[in-house]
Length: 423
Ligand code: PGA
Ligand code: ZN
Image 1: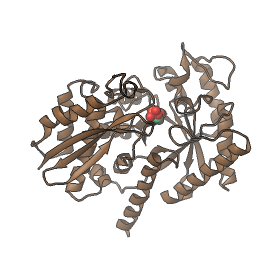
Image 2: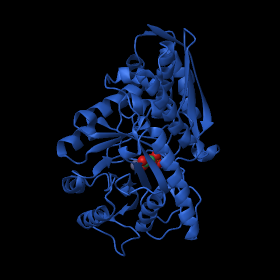
Image 3: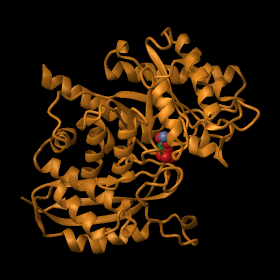
Image 4: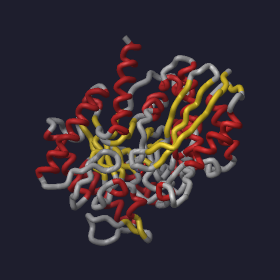
């Protein structure tokens, strides 16, 4: 049994100079947790995401303030939760969703609710003197040996996160098992990152960084970016596709207009079937390990076709397509529309519901990729979450910028702890 003694929230900034919410949850025992919530580039990013509550007061932060969400935590949510006896995080999450009373958390906001859910999870883990990842593994009923997920480094940022001239949103570097421990994977990630910077310099391309710490270069085509990634792997004395693989978050919603796919690499807009042919060519050339949001979120026919064509060799990942939404995941499983899910707690709003969505995907044999958001804080919750639920992949951006590196560095700590427990 536990009781919350205090809950207080405040408005802080995320990595894009946009307000977000930080909440402290204090148990009667004095154990406490502090958590803050990330935010996508569009809000909500996919049509099906839970709602992030913003003040819409044009006099503060261009309408992006979160004082209403902060107020809900400090008043209505506190009034409901404080002093109530509970036995599990699931009880708190149920109270929160019942109090909100909407299917997409639009009344109290998924941001206020998630901040309370995550802060409570941290407080509860601390109360039983258990590392957060082990506490979350217990909630997820994950009894397998824990491991660090394979990192998916977002090295080049285009689309909504870049400088405006690459259509695809993320160009990934993914170390293979042959690289060894997570520490070695992080090392090769950092070495490749620096090599990409040098390659861009040599080409006279701009190498400032985008929202997720990857470079946002003035390259001409999406293929140029993939070419630079391949070259960087070779310059680091590794073999592309053998030691280090490539992946893409196409984020196709962002360049889909009037039923057609419009990208710089092709002179005219493409129908779905034509764009799928283009993706085949791309895959033949670069042997992509992960292909995220390759098609628009409503192009179900296209998703099913692509999964049929490439799904046995390339992992087809749904992000905006699924929005970590249980109904969408269930439908995509039954229609065989993809083979992996991006899991983002803030698309759902509570920790226990997020775990349930991940379990649905996992039970269908899908891969799980736990992801940050483009607007992040230094909270490392999702690193613990990814280890706890046994995620296959973790996507926290480039191995650069504090809010991204905080999470990768936390993996180093967990890896060391796991090794110690095994020895
Ligand atoms: P977002 O991007 O956080 O801006 O939605 C991340 C992603 O698409 O994976
Ligand atoms: Zn995505």
